[in-house]
Length: 423
Image (tube, rainbow, N blue to C red; front, side):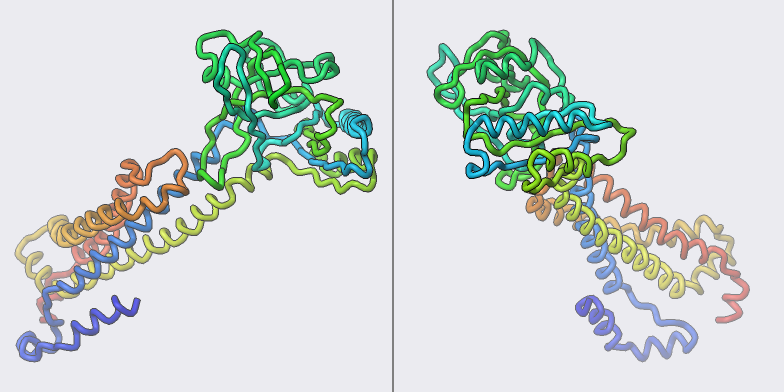
């Protein structure tokens, strides 16, 4: 601001007294306007850079928020619990707690279904493991999760082929598994994955009995940036004899017409163990938390871009208005000689075409180099997205046209008789 404010002051510090005396006291002195055009070009270039960055961030956030996660997270509530070994020393006690909790949750009015899983969607964690496919020497590394068979119905994950495990499969332990579509396509291609056997967690042999739809369990990875691509995933039922799984999550789907059941879910789980800290959280809120940073970046940069666009419009309108004042006598003479109002408007607006075009060109060139720093913050959009660059340039050009047209329209309404009399 100090720099751009000082440039006009330096320009005015060298007055041309002879030209002022020749022009007369009432006529503003004519100056080439080079400094004014330089400031206009610089302002347009800077505003265009800001607008392009804002456009990229807003487009990225809209794409991220509209990602199909593979199920409807609305009306789903998750509550994670960890049972300490001192209070729950045996696997039987652990299984008993979660069975009692599930029974109470399923009896609540408004609860459609409930299940238990080791991790809830959108919790920011993953459970990668090594598996070995029979008849293959190489190991694969898909995501692996344990849950009961109601998991797929509770989340609404569609079954593409085969079936999901049920109560009888859970009682047998980890002997069967369900995989997602991405895993079936990547590891077996065109071969039917149903009936294939894999070894999970080094020593657990399971048979694939079903293929379900892909889900995106997280949308933001702190290491790799924003993403939502589904990964190969295998689902295995809980093994009741395995004591390690003391941390599990209750997942509950509620009916839309029963309002918020967070308090009821909290009370139902606490009834199984009053000493546990229960914090049920809707999955919709977890999803909002995952996109909180992209939303903040888009909001802040978009706000500054809007302010910059407003200032650019005011600046262009000011330049056009100043040009009208300087050329008032010329406009009056031309109109007295028969120039139409439309011709006067075109003459005034075309005077800013060159500085506006130059500002847009410089802004696009600078933005092409600077937007690369946003690559890690963008989702499914390139830093040099042509559509965003073109849309923002067109928007700024339209604003410049409107800001120039209004003073030009007022100039076309000048009464040539009054202008000539004043001179």
